[in-house]
Length: 536
Image 1: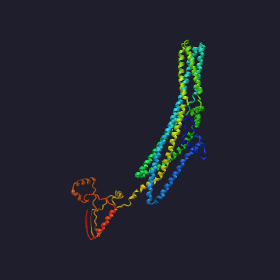
Image 2: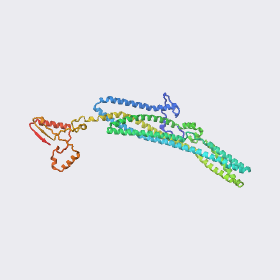
Image 3: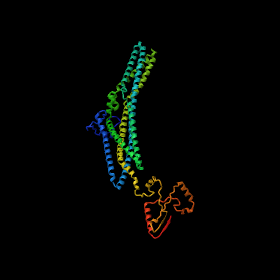
Image 4: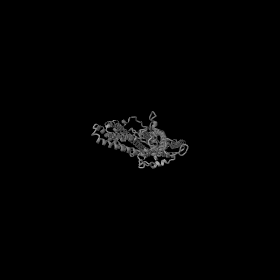
């Protein structure tokens, strides 16, 4: 576990860290985070290949189901077909709902991962700002001290050359100033090696932007497929369901692939987060050649680790105190005797005040609390938010893969049902002009058929042929003309006594069973020795 104050590895990090690490030869590999070593890389690739195995299994299941569907669907009876169609429809809907739930989880996981990586980059930028401020403060102070030694202290030596006691004090001051400059120059431990924290933050941010965008596009693609699949099932649009099935197969490959990548990333990140101090120290020392004591001081930041800059800071503080005492003595004793030295002494005194201010600022920056806080914040962002987001993305990929596997198996049976929906009209009479299928066929006929009418007829008891059925002429007049005629006749009380055929009204709707009953009753009447003329 990490010894950093304020950070403790989470329980899911501990669980993932215990996952067996096996290479391609099925040999157990150490679970210490070492991405630059080939055996450890093999262990992560082996974990990623588990998703490839799941993909192969899902493809086999899809192939077996589709083969069985193509070969055995014709042998089923009508009752089993209708029952299976209902089950298939609801299975498609359930798969889409599960996929939508996974999409919501994916959006949350993608946001959490982005927040964690943003916290890492922000902490790296703060650390880079602190290190840059330390280097800039040290370089400015050393340059100021060097300029004072070269100019004002040299002039004071010339002025006090005739007074030995003053000359000794000036030379002691010069040695103290040079000692402070040397001690401060040795404190600068970060020489700006590449990659520095700022460059690392920019690189991480660049990769994260593309990762976030890729997952957003994948989530939107899954959402669009789910919505259009539901639309195709609801409206029974065959071509749309076929297109969504093909696209679902492509997204199925992406889902299993992203799952393998997320699985390897989660296990590798758990290995790092279980003990990040050792890896950070080794990599930082290998890149920057910084003293291990300095790295341990900033990474641990506890009372057990001493400040590696304490000795130099103490010596610099004492030297500045001695310089201040000597300048105060020269100002009190030498200025009355050498008025020309007052200006140079004031310049050196101003340099001393500026150096003391920079020194106190430097002591605050060199304290471990600032850089250690940035380090802990980066660990929390990566190992808390980042790890949680990756686990949610892993769950999203798993649910998405299962949902699209079920959808690919179910959708072909659904669209086959769509093409057979016209079979519901097989029990209707083909001669019925109000049959929807007959209406579609009438569009290809040049002339309109004469519809039999039952508004007026004559029957005879001598012969069945005496049944004369007259067909009313079908008016081709436009609807507006018919409406005008109706409007003109609406006020005539005798219009209600006019037969329907004279009103140019369409015949009433009827079923085949009604027509059969009517014809059979008419045939019975023709056998009687009477003759009846009926007019409607």
